[in-house]
Image 1 (cartoon, rainbow over the protein chains, first blue to last red):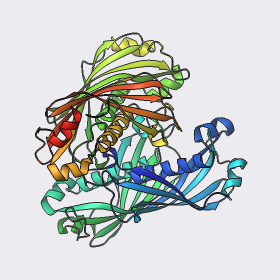
Image 2: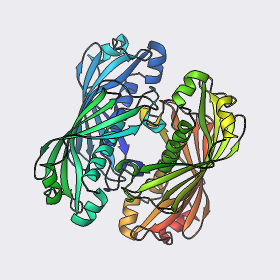
Image 3: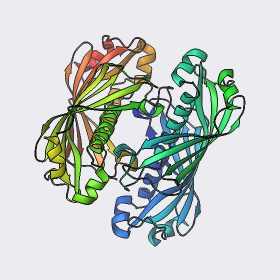
Image 4: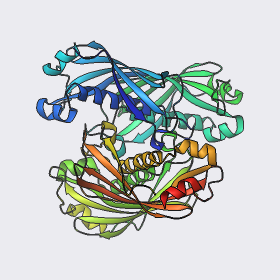
Length: 133
Length: 133
Length: 133
Length: 133
């Protein structure tokens, strides 16, 4: 069993901001992706190696984000990952971005496992799936 | 009244792709944003000038994207914008990304109008609102 | 023989700007890359197909950029490509970004041709090389 | 006096890569910028606060990068910052990206201090300048 919630800290840099003076909205999807990658790494799964070893690759099938308050340059954010559903070939995650406890953005993301060569859906590798359930 | 649907063509460059060999999923939000900006421009509204003239700025409040098929380097995409709801301070849009007619990604986006100084919600400037309804 | 100079127009979007209110400096490298890709396309070379057909891929070996004046949201830029040297496996280019004639940034870029599988240097495919000289 | 060299570790994520399977060349400028920001922070200077307190902002005047070997997804990079010249209104830096000691990319960057309101050159704030020399 995995921990109920994983947290990944990250800093807001110039590259993340836009001329509105705040983090560009699309970049939260990057922040959420970094946290998912670190969450998988914390479970012992390096995606590059997973692909080489098993041919499996994860893709994003659906994503929805709600934005509540803007983040700014130099802010330190905490990005969470919580698995809400683990099927054989897909999983659903709830992810949030917070600054000092304040909720800035919240996201639900559905991830699918595919064969990296054919891009066809496939079963999540067992050694990972057993950790997700 | 605005046209029922606006279309913006764009090309996939190296910067848009990732090591999976396809367009990085978060970048569709950039594609959709470019199309909204060109749609506003087609209605006579340049966002930089709108901000200077009226103090109004648009922000993304919610976005959801479903991914159906990947785009690749050199693909020519057509991004659509269709307004589905126009309130006094917010609007909702349906946006799609297609390649030669094939639907690659579809998105619903809720945009809010705020005061660029205070980041508080405000009424969409009348001259624009009258075009959206 | 190729034309002495190729030009590619592009628009500055929110994604290109940063909290300084101007285009984020690193993004000029993206603009220059887009122009190179369109320049190759204008010569009849689609990079994805070049890679599939010949196994050749271009990589950036060196780049230098000087920044003279900032670009802002909604600006329309014209990006130039001028080849200054065409060797067997490398080429050098001079690229500029202008807004209404004003020089905003200037770059010299050295590109190498490599084998996409091995990442080893290789000769630029003849059909392209003959156009560059 | 500042330390002779500052180091900032970072991880390569999907967002950093391109369809060549490696880090997109322009993204090294982002990596170098993150390291400069952390270097300034390590000296006690938060850029957002520096701007609010003194009106000073740093911009990139010139940058050159040489690429020696590609970084890939999941790689852990170490980015260095070494000041090579500190004038009254500009400074020059040498920055490198390494993976397990191997040099992947090297850069020289010239930074200028400007007034955030007027974008005119100005003296680097004394409390920072005294640390750089």
